[in-house]
Image (cartoon, rainbow, N blue to C red; front, side, top):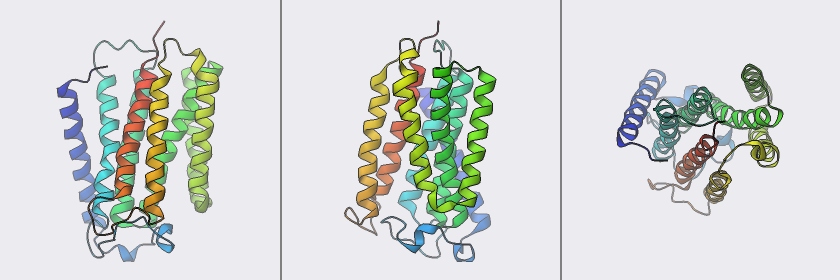
Length: 259
């Protein structure tokens, strides 16, 4: 699939507007982030990048790299609005997936810019939106559920996940992993054989990219790949690769032929 330069340009412009909106929000709320409850990671290690105390953007590399997700999300939406859509993947579903990716990016900016508990909340919510979409998309195809039922399931799953995030925040990463692994099993084991003309290698490319990204995430988190004052951060690379992986998954869904 070829992406037009105009689409790339428009996605970049929309991403810049999203970044400007987040900057305005941060300007209203900051820059003294110490008045807010700190993110739970501050009790151990909020990744390698050295926090710039008193700055509007506490972790600049980790913050701005998060916009890779936002760019990918806008690209999904703009691509789905283009002419000649011949996929069984509904444009409306592409819009939801794209919006979820946008939320991931902006939520991640809020976490790394502030290292606050409320920033962490929005960061994790974005992850839940994406993983819930993937799980429901697989279940919908496997069980041949109607669109309205899929919407209700998606909203219900998101409400449950967000409620658990509020009530038991310490399980946030494990819960995300459980939902994501469940989604992968449902997709590759049950939904994929029912998708006409699908290109499974795109899904596998995404999984491989995520595997590399997660390896880098661990090296950064454990201080094995760490230069605290550098603008080159392993966690920032994790963001960029994660956005690439999401784009591969979108291409996978879009490759299903209608008919």
